[in-house]
Structures are given as C-alpha cells and as structure tokens.
Image (cartoon, rainbow, N blue to C red; front, side, top):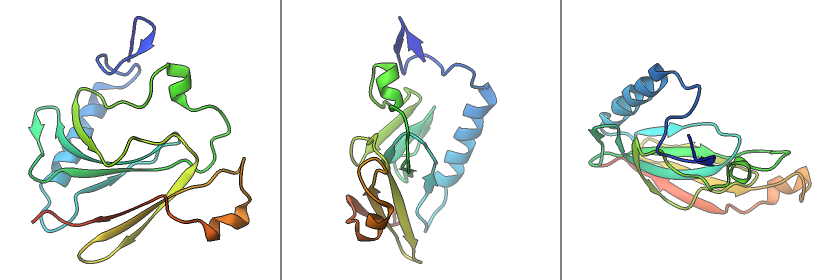
Length: 152
C-alpha cells in the first residue's frame, strides 16, 4: 500500500490476508454472472461516498455486465479523512478496472435506495453534524440521484 512513504495502488494492502482478495473475486464473479438483476455491491465505508461500475477484477473481464459498486457514505466522521493522512486521494487498486460515476467524495453523508422489480433508485445526500442540525436531514435535497437497471 505504501511506496517510498507515500500511498500506492501498486503494492498489496498491509495486513490483508490473501484469502480476502480471493473471496472478493468470487463474490464479484457471482454478482457479475447474475442475469435479469442489477449486480450490486453496497459496501460500508466510514470515509467516502461513491458509485461506480467494476469492469474487471483480477483476470475476470466483467465489462458485459459490470458490478455496480456503491459506497453509501459516512454519517459523521469526527476526524480528518484518510486521504489527508496518506497524502493521496481515493484511488482504485490495480487489481480492478473501475468506471466511476463521479469522483469519490470524502464528506459526511448517506445514501437511500428504493428497490423495485425492474430498477433500483438511489439518492446520495451530504450532511454534516459539524455544519447542520439533525432536523435539517428531512429537508435535504439529494446531491446525486441514479437509477440502476439490469443489463439486457
């Protein structure tokens, strides 16, 4: 993860067991092989909000039915975000080919998803306890809305 004292996507993440990456690849392959549904992975992260499409993991080409990946946001980080400590912004490991819907955001926020038979409606919100009161959540406008549909 670090190369010459700086963050890097070219080196393995320290302390990660090799089985974790293999498990990741098996899960992504299973999602990719689904038909008639949105291959979706929502992964909690206390540092960011993001939406993208995973087109490759390792040697597996998933470009015909990319896995939609959502990082739903961080509701209340009380400290600086990791990119400040690492000296680099959010980056994808070289093990993946990703297409981001937008540059991942390191701000407090959350995501709401409505699941329908033919689609998933998502709405991403920015809210910070440092700048806003809890009562303001009910009046927030979505920063980003995305409709996800199965690849046909």
